[in-house]
Image 1 (cartoon, rainbow, N blue to C red):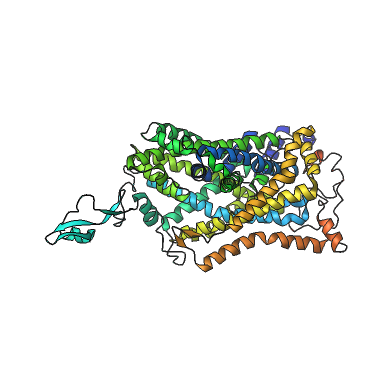
Image 2 (image 1 turned 60 degrees about the vertical axis):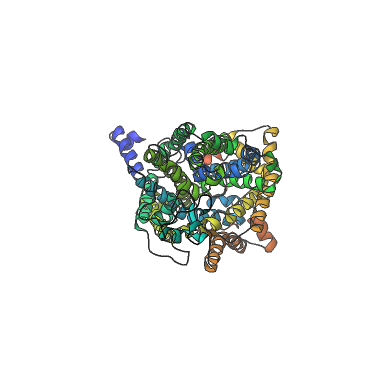
Length: 638
């Protein structure tokens, strides 16, 4: 046929290739899905999934949780929760996205009544991407600041106040005067050129140079959320650079991001290995490791419910389930990809990375405790305090500190970028499913437009009150909304759509399995996982406390704004459900029943994969409407 239409067969083929690549460059020659495209290689997908799951929390949260919850004993509930909650949810989401080749919103053709769950996932991902790139901006700032012969936070410089000190500060003491021995404050003693009597000093803890550098230089932190202050210009520039990196990596969709992750997903392991080797050679390293997972392990901690809750929560969040990203990334797989083995590999890699990172972190914190004469427990911190205070302080005291600091913050940068790539891909995949023709023609401007809008929204997070905004969004948006979405996701697919039917869908992709293979997954999906997630949700609501940062409480309007953000994310679940019911036909009961059936266009994306079970689809899956579809023509489940 090509020979008849074109005088030169080879020139014609070349012309077609150029046209295809210019109009739809996210689709390759070997892709089976010529509308949405597929991953170029299986390794592109696996590394993207590993990069999405392995994030900053593996470095700054897991080691702290392990230490505070019994050391090595914590690995027992951690492994159990991986099997009960992490793997089942991860496998479910990967299977769902791959089966339908649709993103987190459109994939809810499986259960139209619950389509709001997908909207909730995407909205939460949008909020999280806003502040997550700010953390990447912090890492960029510290990375640039490390290119100096002496790290700027290694000493108390001109930006420091009188509280800056690595050792306790004397506040008062006994002195000997003509009138006898007197107890006086240190300022009076100094002004009178007197000397404290040995052993009479009263101390107060000082602030580390790295802590004051974080507050006074990096953040220029204001006194509270009420005092917004101005934009910290160098953080704003770092934030802009972070978004430019993300936009450049994603402008061709998975075809470009799938190549970038070969570096960003693998480089952190190289750095962690280097830091572990370096840390293990330092004096005091064994003490840090012992506190982390050695002789200090406390198995009696396993009797405490808090330990099990922490293990389940860490597994749930570290695997990035219910954010929509797993569905989005898996939707670009070929239909017969073995998503089961992928889930096992990625989950185990994520958890082993957390354990491995703990050794690297605690070996150096042990050295820091040794040279400062403190206990390891006094230098162990979590979150920002570990990444931007405790660890920089330790690095500043190592020989060749700038080199180790550059490695560490470049590692944080790559860890954050991986997760950010997947989050933005979640947003663009949703747009692609809703507006496929526009996305084919305008992928680059749409992707860059998303990055620009999110950059502008994130500017509030690089003001002098920016750190309070970062914590506020993280406290509210990255918590209950994700738990609610996960519970409804499992309940809707397994209890309403049908767990056995969903298993048949999976077997269409990976081949039939014996009943014993599905025994564990059925137990988790039908009973264990939803009950466990519900318990975590109730526990977190009961344990709710007013957020604060650095012991500074948030104002009432700030807390109210936090509740408004999370309500805005989850309110779409009932709103979309009501819209679906109103659009349906029949009495109220019939409408609800119809909404709980798969939409008429639910099934495998490509006709060749639909088989007998989905051969009667009334509407091709590859022609989605940008509006919320009606379900009056829904077919009954088979």
